[in-house]
Length: 170
Image 1 (spheres, helix red, strand yellow):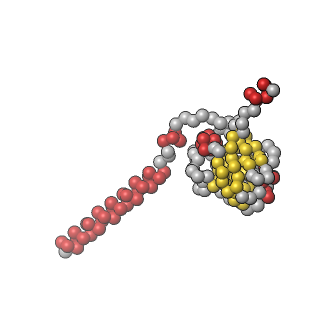
Image 2 (cartoon, one colour):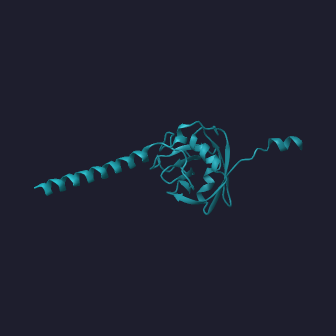
Image 3 (cartoon, one colour):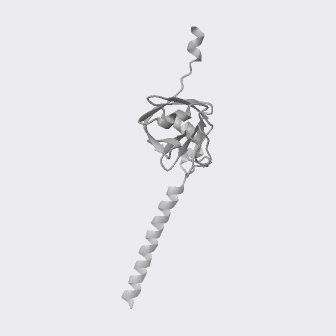
């Protein structure tokens, strides 16, 4: 009887410690990154180019931490991925901030981030009412997004250079 009680007690203690370890791991996974709580420099209005072999699309970024994180990574070269005949995706080498609001609503020209990928997407067609995954909006292309429909292969993302200073001297 003593052995049975001791065995049950040890088993309960082991299960309790395993449960506690699992809870700690889950708590740590949900804790936001400290950098997400700190301030960041806005990149609102900054323009980036999405360049393929045949196409160049200029996107104006919004005032999100994720957009600022993306600018800090540029330039980038990635492989285009077709996304259900309405968007082109690109897998990032690192995650961007994910503290912003998400949406499933999109328009042609929208540029967004899907944290689970971590993937970027540029929407070139509006054949669906909404996306099937939540996306953090990063910016918008006023024109040219439709040209991405037939693109494949490698894509380069880079900052649009400031040309105003050079044209003054000419």
